[in-house]
Image 1 (tube, helix red, strand yellow):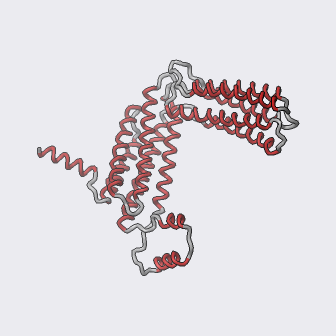
Image 2 (cartoon, helix red, strand yellow):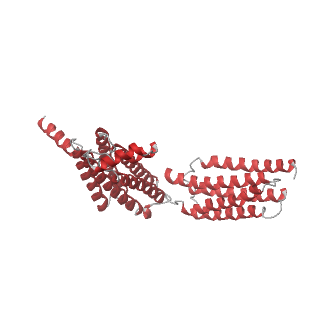
Image 3 (tube, helix red, strand yellow):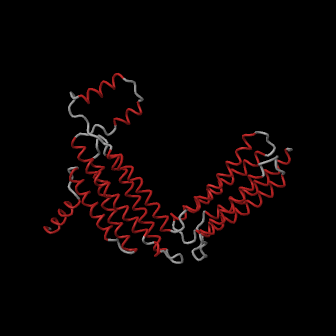
Length: 364
């Protein structure tokens, strides 16, 4: 097991890695829309071939130290399949929007990364008598299997990819809603037992500063602040209803997606996803503003932005197919919650401002 043999393996592996890196650079560029789109099923099948090649790579290490020729032949066969996999992945992104392209690229990159780790470890293990190093190869083969298996869960259409992105926003909003519901009023009477117990505990028991701060956050809202928090919970709950109805509407558009001509269709979907993510950001901001001292101007600004976003959502849906009755009702429900929230903040509501502007226009 001489140094020359290991250097030869390193040189062979480096050559294969460079070829794959060059192919990845091609993947970073969007394919021409005039090209034929490759079915994602073809990509999955090629992924199965990579899994088989990874198994064969692992089997070389089950007995004695493999020969250099056997390792090089296995390397060549593996990277030829990997090269074909990447080209098919690239072909599957024809007429894909940014969201779907990102999903495809991420899945393909996971297969590449796990493959690189497997063969880098394989070459590193050559000539080594360390048992741990040899035992790591089956684990790395398993990583390749997992990355190839994950291809089956990768979105294959723009609608599916956009819907998944919106679902992630819904999950985030649910988390904010859960945290909001954990907000509690502070003790208004410093002589009551709860206050005394809390004070005694603070004075007598050592506590971790970070955990103590986390426990106290949101547990000392005044009655007025609790009213604002309860109203905000209504806004977030209604927002979640809007997002869920939007996801249902988008999922129903799957049959309208034409793989051969869908540029305007995909543009509308991407805009809707950005609007959805924008609402998610505003809900995060709203949740942060509820902790004392509450930031009323920031909450008012957040409310106005959500008003604007749901208006834009309805416009974009109109460009696609037209919003469903359920979605329109959900948006109206959210608008009502936002007006109630703004009145709880002691600010003029958006509706009040609109009426005032109309009166000024009429009187001028």
